[in-house]
Length: 150
Image 1 (cartoon, rainbow, N blue to C red):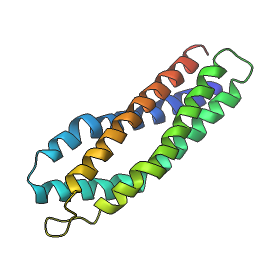
Image 2 (cartoon, rainbow, N blue to C red):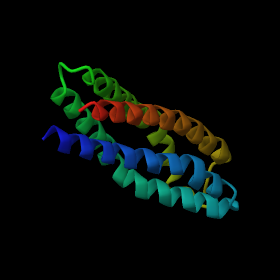
Image 3 (cartoon, one colour):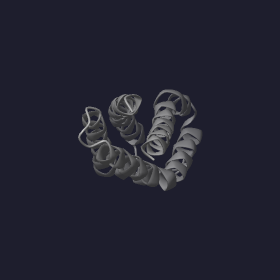
Image 4 (cartoon, rainbow, N blue to C red):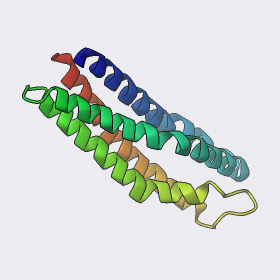
C-alpha cells in the first residue's frame, strides 16, 4: 500500500512542479512579450483557469506528502517526507498570502481597464513565483528521496 501512496504522491507533486515551472519559465515570459491587451487577457485567463485547479492540487500534494511521512514514520526516509510536507505548507501559505491577491486583482484587468502599475504587479508576482517554484522543486526532490528508499 505504501508503494501505491509513493507513486501517487510522486506523480501528483511532480506534475504540479512541472506546471508551475512551465508557467514561470515558458508561459509567462512569452505572455510578457505580447502587446498590452493580449498580455493582460492571457494572464487573466491563466489566472482564472489555474486559480480553479491549483488550490486542490496544492492541498492534495500537501496531504499526500504528509500521509507519506506518516506511513514512513520511524524510518530514515520519513525525515525527507516531513521536510517536503513542510515546504509544501510554506508554498500554500505563500500562495494565499502573497500570490493569490495579485492574481485575483489581475483576473479582471483588460486593455481598457487596468492600473498603471500592472506591469510592476505582474513582475512582483513573477518574482514571488520563482521563489515558490524553487521551494516546490526542493519539496519534489525530497519526495523523490523519500520514496526511493522504500
